[in-house]
Every structure is written in C-alpha cells, then in structure tokens.
Image (tube, rainbow over all chains, first blue to last red; front, top):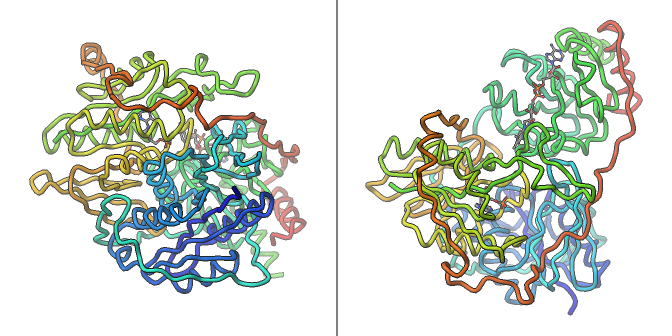
Length: 325
Length: 261
Ligand SMILES: Cc1cc2nc3c(=O)[nH]c(=O)nc-3n(C[C@H](O)[C@H](O)[C@H](O)COP(=O)(O)OP(=O)(O)OC[C@H]3O[C@@H](n4cnc5c(N)ncnc54)[C@H](O)[C@@H]3O)c2cc1C
Ligand SMILES: Nc1ncnc2c1ncn2[C@@H]1O[C@H](COP(=O)(O)O)[C@@H](O)[C@H]1O
C-alpha cells in the first residue's frame, strides 16, 4: 500500500514555523521517492494564514480552527487531530524536533504503539519501511535505523531539507476540531516573555557564542557587540548558562538549540562534544581560544589562538572600520 | 505528596565516557553508567518539593538487573525507594514498548506527580514521558522550568519553557511532567545519603508481574539500527596567530571571502 505522510505543522504568532516548511519539503521529497501522498496539518486558534503558508509547500493541508488551544496546551489537541487523520489512512507521521513536536510524537506513540525514529536528518525507503539517518551520542556517530512496519512516527531536525515552494499551492481543507484531546490538556494561564529569551537562534545567519572564557555576565557585552556588528544573534555554551550569565534559551548544544548558521563565531568555548552537537553543521566556524589544544580546533575553519579580551575588541574595531570605509 | 521519578541509566556523557566499539555501536559494558541528566534535574525538583510539602520520592527504572547500581545513585540523593522492571525479554526494547512498560509499572504505584526527563543523552528521543502520559490518560506538563504543586487543591502549576520565555500551565493532579536543566542543579549525594541508599528497598518487577502482553511477535522488535556511520568530517582549518590587530584583520578578510561581511 502506498504511504501517506502527515506533516504536523507548527504555528508561531499566527505564522508557519520555518522548520515546518522544511519538513513539508522533506516529506514531499520522500513521498516522491516512494510514490506516496503527503498531507499537512495546522491546528491553531486562528489557523488560516499559517495553513495558506503551509499549502505553498504541500499538495494538501487540513486546517483546524481550535479555540481550545488559545488557553490550553497545544500538543494534546494536535495529537487528537493527527489521530483522526491516521484513522483516515495516514501511514507515517512527521513532527518537528521541538518541545511541541516531540510531545505530539510521544502522545501519538503512546496511543498508537507505532515505532518512532527520532531526530531524522535524512530519510529514504526500503520497500514499505522508512529508513532514517540521525546523529546519535552527541554527534559521535550517525545511525541509520528503520521500523519494519508500514507505519512509523518520525521526528525531524532543522536542516534536514530546504523549504521549497511547489509550482502550485495545495488545497486547504478546513475542519471542525475533534474536540477530545489525546490527554486532558493543561490550561495555559499566562504566556510570559522574558528579556533575552526571545531569539530565533535556529534561524540566525550569524551566531556569536560566549563560553566560560568570557568570565562573567559583563563578558557577554563583547559577545553582543560582535553579534550586532555582524547582524547576528548571541548564543552560549552550557558552562555560561549554568553560571547564570545568560538565559537557558541561548544555550547551544545537545541539550540546547541546534544551529546551522553561515557563520558560527565563538569566544572562549572549548568545543566539548555536547556543544558540538548543536553547531557542527555550521557553514563556517571561527573560534577564538587561548588554548592551542582546545578541541574546537578540530572543527574550526579558522582557529584563532589568543586572548578573547584582546582579539574580540580588535575584531570589533576592524569590523567597524570596514563598515565605515 | 508522593512523586515518582523515571530515571534511566545512561552511559556517562561527561569526559567522553560513551565508548563506541569497532562497529561504532555503543559499548555499554565499557561505559560507566549514570542517571540521565534531565532525570536528575527532575529528581532534584522532586526532592525539594517533598521537603517543602511533605511526602516521599520514589524512582522507576526499566533496565537490566545491573540497573540497580545506577538507581543507588538516585537513592543516595534522597529518593526513598525504587522500582526496577528487569526482564531478559526486554533487551533492546523499542520506544513504544518502553512506554508501555513504564506506564504499566507506574500504574502499580501511588503518586501525585510522575516526573520524567525531557529527553535522554543516549537515545535523545524525547518522547517517552509524553507517551507514558498518553497511556495513563493524564495531563502532560512538559519542558518544566519550575514546578509548583498545591497539594490541598490537588492542582499543579508548571512553568513550561517556550520560544519567548515560559508559559504558565495548570492541571489537576495526578499529572505527568517532563524535566529540564532549567529546574536547577542537582545535589551531590552526601556520604550519609550513600550509606542510607544501600538499605533502601528496590522492588524488582518482571513482565509477568505487569501482566501485560508486551512482547513482539517472533521476539524481534520492529525498530532496529541498520548501521552506524562516522559523522561527516570537516576539512582541517587554518590556525591564526600573531598580534590581536593582525588576527582581527585575518578574521575579517576570511569573513569577506565567505561573503559574510
Ligand atoms: C548530558 C550533557 C549535556 C550537555 N549539553 C550541553 C549543551 O547543550 N551545550 C553545551 O555547550 N554544553 C553542554 N554540556 C557541557 C559540555 O560537556 C561542556 O562542559 C561545556 O560545553 C563547556 O563549556 P565551555 O566550552 O564554555 O567551557 P570550558 O570547557 O571550560 O571551556 C572554556 C574555554 O575558554 C577558553 N578561555 C578561557 N579564557 C579565555 C580567554 N581569556 N581568551 C580565550 N579563551 C579563553 C579556555 O581555553 C577553554 O577552552 C553537556 C554536558 C552533559 C554531560
Ligand atoms: N528505560 C527507562 N527507564 C526509566 N525511565 C526511562 C527509560 N526510558 C526513558 N525513560 C524516561 O523518559 C524520559 C525521556 O526519554 P526518551 O524519550 O528516551 O528521550 C527519560 O528522561 C526518562 O525519564
């Protein structure tokens, strides 16, 4: 039986998340390789715009206007809508590697008992069975895994595919909500914005990262300055986050964000495996470190040996001079 | 209040202790085992909650019988008892099976909160806690940065990490929570804790005790690893030495070449 892939889309401030567009194109490519169909799902209080945006990448989008997600958590409702589509013949569910996407994948797995392939960065078919590649053990290896079954749930990482609009936008089908969430949905009493937390590290073209070497919250002034000069965003190692110098939302690595910018520039980061897991896909890696043996040298395109408190200000001055000239 | 924390033994991710064998598979025998990092954050939060509200913390693990050793580390932090589901038939169990086993085992215990990790350092699926909530039909409060129960009202509030900061969630207890690093640094076991852990009860359960039919037909899990490849290698880069101003020029030249500035 040919596969029908479901892409569970995510919405931020009424717009389609960029990762969802990538996963849509990932699924379209996979369906083309195996001769199957693809459908997208948008569940939101006001889904219209995001559904339209999703349909630019997908031949068919199911759009559910769910008032319940305005003041309740999203995943149990999204999982219930996905479950309805499974009952109508979806064979594979693709969700994002985000907190929401993993919640949906887990809720569906608990309900359906389907196998899960997590953190996919590539996928193909072996007959009916889907085969995915995923980085494991903080980047030490890439595993190819499969589920010997005609059904599976796959979570997909950022950067697995480039988002590509179709020649013609897909059809949008609006539906009323199933109404019964996969589990009782917790109430959302408040959505709190925190200073320094709202950054789209994953989408930044330039990421400037401070590690333990910046030696305190003041050290991030230099990191922020370079980020501003380069039109980038500030990130951090876990050592800097654990020290309380910068919010957890800025952490890059295995337990933080995964970034793949055009430029990753770090100051005083050693380059531990768990940190690399979040940045080794960057196009260009420039690292400033005073220790010639720091492990980040193994993956840096440019490894600058020196004191960050000297090299950093010199670089800021140089960038400013070139910008002015 | 009773809190049950799901603790998975994982190869120690620190100091590169996750040894890969010749075939690039994880050599678990050669890797010292610790409690998964996010589970420790959850355990620490649980211990602080029972200090504040009264009650007791227990732990739940599915692992081979040697998992007892890792569980002692969690007991040494202050958990009072443990449940270990150990069964030869579970070797290599896949994620849906792990979810079913943990949910069935959790259901044998009395608790107000069930806390798991957001994800694991060895598998990093990040789906088991949500899966267990689905099996149990309980509210899921995921990606917790703070947990505030109100035992009298039988409700719990959780600050859930969001892209912008956090969402404040509320649900009735019992509920299922997934723990993150943002909950705060776990305590080190004291010598007294380590001594006390030796005598704390770990109840061993087998699949037969759980009474559920969880084994795959033909004895083989449908999910399997086909092969493991080394990560793509990056071409060796250039080292930049000299005085800071010259280094800054060299960095800027490189960025200009790469059309970043
Ligand atoms: C389960 C687990 C998950 C983890 N997840 C993550 C994660 O998501 N992200 C993450 O980053 N880490 C993670 N870690 C931690 C990781 O192993 C490292 O401990 C951490 O990345 C180290 O941060 P760092 O490089 O800033 O600090 P350090 O390793 O202490 O390195 C500091 C570097 O700064 C250099 N330096 C100091 N002063 C100067 C100066 N004046 N000028 C120039 N250079 C200087 C030093 O030479 C050194 O190389 C995780 C660990 C575990 C066990
Ligand atoms: N074998 C296990 N024993 C106990 N808890 C587990 C086990 N596997 C997963 N968990 C729990 O589920 C969480 C998420 O795991 P995972 O989805 O595998 O990343 C972990 O942090 C644990 O709390």
